[in-house]
Amino acid sequence: MKRMISICLAAMMCVLGASAQAIYDIKVKDDAGREVSMADYKGRVLLIVNTATRCGFTPQYKELEALYEQYQPKGLEILDFPCNQFGQQAPGSIQEIHEFCTANFDIHFPQFDKIDVNGPDASPLFTYLKSQQGFGGFDLNDRLGKLLDDMMRRRDADYDKNPDIKWNFTKFLVTRDGQVVKRYEPTDKMETIEADLSRLLSE
Image (cartoon, rainbow, N blue to C red; front, side):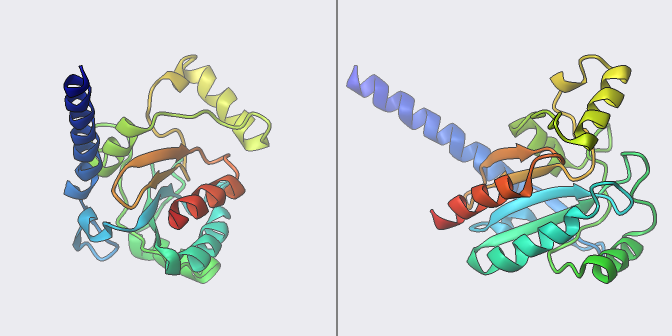
């Protein structure tokens, strides 16, 4: 019996390890069109976010930069992927987006090429992230969260049942060994994200 339990535990650890490694098999393109392996970020805590420059949540860039300045020396990387799929709120080229973000928010974290996060052309990275952490629900006490929930529920009463990205500034937290441990919707408070980051970085 003990041997059977040991075998089961070992199998579970192998599955978890394989799952965690899967993110490091993915390649993405940076803002200059160069291919970047996610394996380059092994050993770092990652906060991966799809962004837009003309969104009600765009001021979160300022909060993200503040997190980056505080925690990057401790092992954090914030990976920014602009996406134009939600209200066409990320128009322009990646160069124009980068200029906007540096001029208005003085960001220093890595910014990558524009991508789709849903649909047939979705980035493999975000397809993987969604497979690991489904939609967590908007904060209905937040004005924008209530507006988004009302808008989406009118289109699809069961919109919250699928793992698709719902809007700009959805974030995924990834541990140093590649496990996708949490998903934050755009209405989630930055204080909550910071507390989780701080805990992971201190482990």
